[in-house]
Image (cartoon, rainbow, N blue to C red; front, top):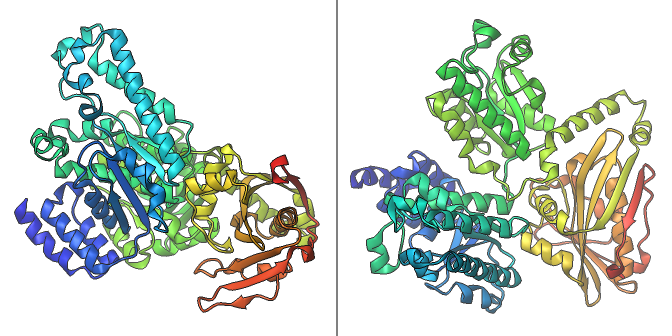
Length: 626
């Protein structure tokens, strides 16, 4: 390992930016990163000084080193700068109980808890055979209660998303293989404990269970654990396993921060099926049972289709003849994927970077929302150089690794798949129908009238929290201030008497647009402040933004009828469509700050609604609003 580290470390030392470091680290698989490489990467991170884009805290019943540092390096490998901190050994309760003492320090985005059974329930590890069935059930209930109490305390004291590691199975039960015949099986007891954990937090928006048992079983418990390190330093894991666990935890960081990519752009020939469509013909393509290569492509298509169920849009970019591609999907009905599963197709002979530009434009998303999967190394290299913002999958040479390669991508992770996620492709189909209707309409007025748009504005409830968090995390174009609130902050705003957090849902004659807008008002001593106002780009251009602002004005009058409404526009690289919106809505007289932001303050009594003639609005007020 030292020899590999030496050759690798020189490149790490030469990295001058986070992007440089990410490229160097990605050149080697995770299991090739030795201790020395990790240390060099940490020194490089300190030298580069990249501003952290997320903060992760750790608490445990045991020593965590080197897991926090491993997470920083694994995140850097993905181009992410993290800041980590950890509570002192064993002080996981104190870590959350004393959280308010942190003062004005930035809050954590993620708080990870790891408890070792040998620390909190030694009888379940060393004397399990002596437990009666009733005592074993009681011990399981006690452990679950202990974890739940910690979670309740943590939710109350920090806005972070909580990630609780479950309990890995014993390398060998105390009774050996006879455990399966015992009145109380230790293996069964542990599985039930982990199921209890899963069920306890399934409905929670802010508490997740990391399947440490699965991660360790995949890696190999004998390789992962170190009894010697535990006895010396209460550190249960080998350094190599910490990197693997860190990669699993990075999935939660991506999901909690809303960095999930929206679209998979995939090649066709020798990527989605074996063979070349134009040369081999649909019937000869390898995809399906009866052939080892065909079965691998068949299973890979299942994995691609599963992403669509998560809410990931599917697009294809292929150097091919459109008619040949159409014939393949038409004739090969045995494939898991159909042509209708793709929200965008770019079939032709343009360079792939231009193809992804066309796809992104057609879907009205940025190229930084794309993941590119192509079997051809030359195409991948061209994409990396021409569109560095696109995530390019390092596709293995053997098709048998395609499925695992796709499933291991961190960029498609979500904390929860909502009903809107599951219907995402359908929403884009409806958006295409609207575009065609707009082209066929005599004028804009006729088109808007025929749309029959309906808007419902309501207080954010428990069922809305996940979607509202997504909107805060992902909406860029029509977003006045681009705040990136955590799940915990969204929940706090929803229940706060000092705030009015509203979500807007829309539908028209083409279908349901889902939850597409949010605004947040905060009560101030002299009135109210507009802390956030955003609208999904697919709802723009029909007056919904004006109708939503009318509801905001009504809220402001109810909150502070004699006060001021303060608002601002904070320009970013992407939110030009929102520029000038405040002035259009009657909030004029703003002053520009050195950072380019525009601030204005208007008496609430002078706010007037602006007609939105083609939008039918229902504003669902609550008694608690008054």
